[in-house]
Image (cartoon, rainbow, N blue to C red):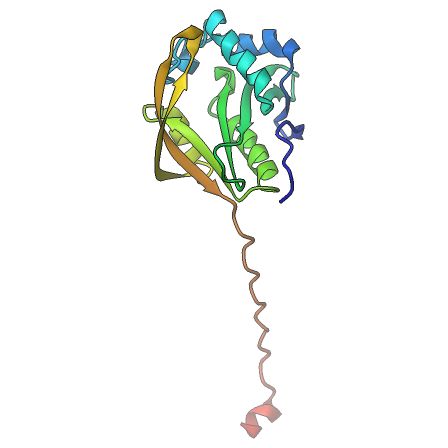
Length: 200
């Protein structure tokens, strides 16, 4: 199995994803400093600078964090992350994703997910998403990319500003699609000539 670059540079029509850097702090916090983004998230105070700084430093240290940039104005609009979850080498997690509210409800989130899925499926067979049981917004978003709910459950411990918060999560998975079978071309039947009709 090929090794996967967890911090690629991916370019789409509306946005590009590149490795998160320390100098992205100001732009990324500006995108995240909105309470509405985090109201359904267990760490619902992540819009605060002290809480978001922990998220940012953890992302830098993860080795899989990407920053989303709007191609129109080069503005930082969000972030996401690849993470190797568990011992199964053919399984990869995509998570820690958020977008500025100015980019909700359009093409940006779908394109971000498609770029990351296409990159991941070059090396893995299945991508998983761990989503909080109360986070209906994120559930609706991944349903749009054909992710399905599984029976797996886990409690992940979040550390917002040194206060552990258990996050009950559901596993959603998006398997790699097999190439669709090629349809056999149907031979066009030509009308029989009068001579051939007589032979029948």
